[in-house]
Image (cartoon, rainbow, N blue to C red; front, side):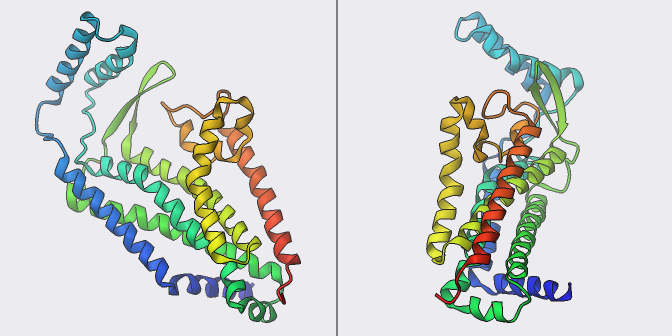
Length: 314
């Protein structure tokens, strides 16, 4: 066990000795600060009477219905939500608040998290083949299985570190720009014909957890490509292509019922949050978890089998 821990530590040191890893951390930090700065600059004044503003919004919507500009059914959901806020005394979430900023970070930065981890995972094994160090590595370790497993565990830990960094740094930056308050801010949504409220910060943390699952799936695919391909550029490039374009392709195909069995229509578990809908009718959280588990096992088996049978002398 101590040898395996040493392997994981060694792989982890390799990852964080690369300049590219720290560049990605720098890009992430700059991105978080930029979002906070733009939010603070363009945020509307939140010092007014929110109840009066909400009542005015309702009146404007009702006038649009009376004038025939929109149909009553089209604005009924908005009217119900606004009335719920008034009845429950729930102030709208201000854009210049810590909770709203962290929600924006989660929404805008999730693709960057996937991209960064895909780049790291896409080079973990292929780099060893490209530099020829794989031969030396395999002669000093008990088995190929332990070598590949240590690399995957290291990738998992790196993914956790990136998520912790995004959450922690965004919390600090958001607190500096908007103040460390507003933890009780609530968002009001319309779900299954009912209006409900959620603690915004808690729901954002939940979304981070769900996005971690999605990121891990993409990282596993990138890791598999890195193991199968000897060329690092090809492995990373294909990993980036999959993470950026395959979700869009799957969404286009979501009009067909069979597309619910496509992996990329199941990785985003945030579609099962209140107020959201899955890509294909009839999909459930349990179904998506099962589909991901099946694909995960298949990918892992192919990856480990490929590595165990790979000729490293070529």
